[in-house]
Image 1 (cartoon, rainbow, N blue to C red):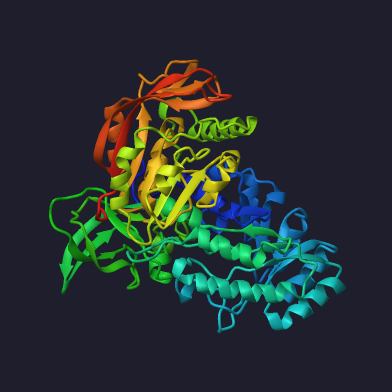
Image 2 (cartoon, rainbow, N blue to C red):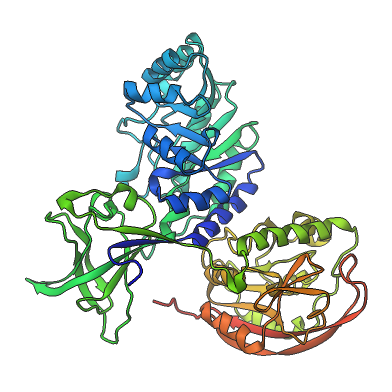
Length: 605
């Protein structure tokens, strides 16, 4: 904590990248043009905005101040979408000076006022579906009770007529109905989508539909993670065939679980029948727990041997409301310890105040880890493009159709862990050479995922008919947590610049007790040292194009254990491979360390 002090927000750029990649994977399934914007009001830390800009996101902004902040941080006006209500004369004047910014008018008043200062402007209209959605009623922007947001259906035609009469070109609709929805709320999402269609049906001129944000993350034990695939399927069902460009404006989903708030434990003292843990930050630093009933997860930085205790965590603001958590079970802490609050990356620092003149907090972005001294994200992108081009370069199967020879020995282990509804995943399936192994295990569903569209297209039709295919990044699959009984990662690990992130994701989507089978080549493998250019520790470019990593068995095992896995079986395997068209023209020997590992049966605390 010496580098940051307390209270301090710490954000993880790598986690933000992973969240963006996961969402983009889901959006591909919609089969319509999409635009991804970041809701800047959730966190406007300049280094974070710079990172999001490198990831290719545009911005959702809500005030002239946010516009100026975005422009100051390298975004162009054309990258901004403005949606806000109750604008002042100064606001309208400012917006008139930025003609390239897209505006979503929030009311009939706004349509009239915008027409006065920006005649002929093309813009969108925010609508209100009169249907509730959100983690709780405090973050629902619509519903039975009239809200201040958008135009209701009963005045929609009036708004269309006003826009036309005023010379405005109204070609977009915007609808953000609420925040923090998870899988159990997808029924409410569908009701909102159905209401949006009622607006679209009477407005054939609409070309762009902005569905806002609202995608949530689990906040407490028992919250069911948002099934992105199911959400994307709803989007596709209702809007995919309407010829619309679809825009999305997530904030929390991208940054909330990428941030932690570090605080100092200032006292541990019993008062009446409660044990209070005091910290040096209050609701002025992060208002969501007190004002919106959106809890953060308290986690001591030091794990002590004493048993957990039931505590109430209090802040340092002189208000009765200033409680972080009440009657929660917390591992033992002492005065002077650091207590972290997880899921603090969104709507914390950006909503902070100087109440009681306590505004000492700082913010810090942890840049992506660069093992070996190279840019992992840049190498990952180039590597995925290189493999995709290889698969596209030949009609032949690069890796052939025979499965790896050691797989048969693991069939019984895979069958034994299947629990209905049983699901298996080939992670990095390529052209499908090993799919017969999974298909023969008898699972209810077999999934296959790869970053290369061309590789998936080369999977034989007879196999494709039995699979659920997905294009995407293995570090951000988009699958729900605890979804698969077993996963294979075969001839893939060595090609991953972000292998640690991939292992963390595979751990997340495995059921407790689920298995991961992978093979990891070392320096004795036949391709090691062959036309390899070293770019970092254990990292090389084969033919100056394809990333490879070679590590020793003990290092491989340690990486898996660091990700939380338990080793079930491990051993050296050696086999001969036929030539690989377009990649390696001679017959050769492969040597790999093969590991069968499992996610522990019980959740780790």
